Image (spheres, rainbow, N blue to C red):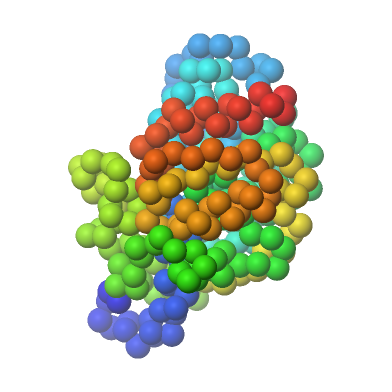
Length: 280
């Protein structure tokens, strides 16, 4: 496993957690409110606000293509920066964003971001729909990491050697080795793009996947949609279909990598708009 030589002994204890961490991770770029200065093509006054939550090894800029389509169709959009420090604290942060929005919300999560929206939307009065994009959807008492068993959920190509671990006071951050990033998370994107994504990936505290989901899952009470990425090499497509079936989600599939929302932004935006129309 890759790490700084001075930290090898301390990192050995977290190797197992780090393997779990990679599976929960997403693809993307930085905190951004989707206000590009353009006027939307349609009146957005009656449309819900779409809140986009990225996973780990990502930031909010990966939603760029999805944002363009949603804005063009008149939807107000907010792509938040998921802190990636812990499930409870990340969920509380996203909930604070949702609570500050005046009006209805469609809450969208990718990868680990699915666990965050599952908790953040629990009990929220203004969240009309949930959209999971190749995302985890834990029940109360479950961890994201428990769904990484390859005997139950085959398809991931992630190996411990693909992770770079960096200790910091109070924890250890994980990123994906740039040499492995494209194959694992974004195999359907051009190399020139994935090089930038690998260089700008937001690190995740490896402990986030060992933290239990403590809220009643929002997908039990809020209508949900799930987009499966059938060529995902990070989060098993078998696991994705398990989540979708368990929650009774409106399910669609795209032939895409874990970064399907980057490689197929129009299809992803269409699912979000379907959720918005069905619950408005």
